[in-house]
Image (cartoon, rainbow, N blue to C red; front, side, top):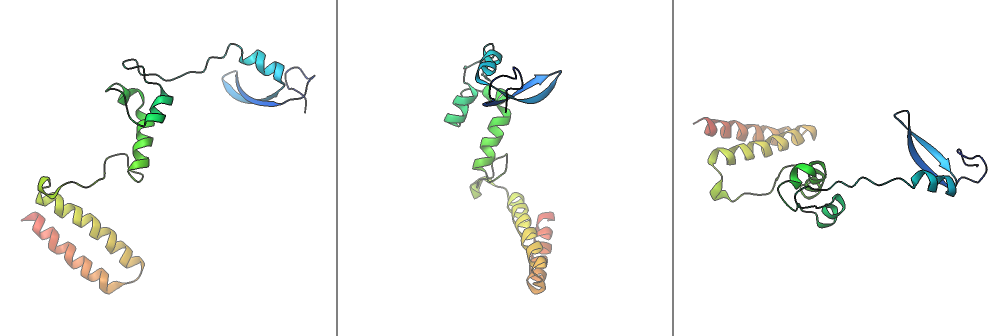
Amino acid sequence: MLCERCKRRPAVNEIQVVENGIPVTRKLCRNCTVELMSGYVPVVKRCPTCQLTQNELAHLRKAGCATCYTVFRDELIKITRQYQQGHDVHVGSMPDALRTPDERIEERLQKLAGELQRAVEQEDYERAARIKKEIIQLKGQGEA
């Protein structure tokens, strides 16, 4: 296949260029690629406070300063999701001494709701009835 720009040499590179505001993929020879890319400077996202770059953030996997949380918000959310099983907020455990009884009841209700749904899907109606009874009891405690 010939270069789409000069139509003389074989195309060896495939690059994406913006033409009239639309990204277009072009197959170019080495010479045309070098000519197009000579003025190209890759955009590097950088924190204005600590000068941490996006590549350094990906390597270190932690922010350099408070401003990094604003500058690299999307990247940090992706990193957090990797460590938190798909959640973008901390889902780790909390010491029981710091949790209120209402929080413990709410957490147990959520867990039981999931178990109830699984029991119904598996058509284990006896287990579902026991879980439903426990949910009703816990809801009564939460209101008291």
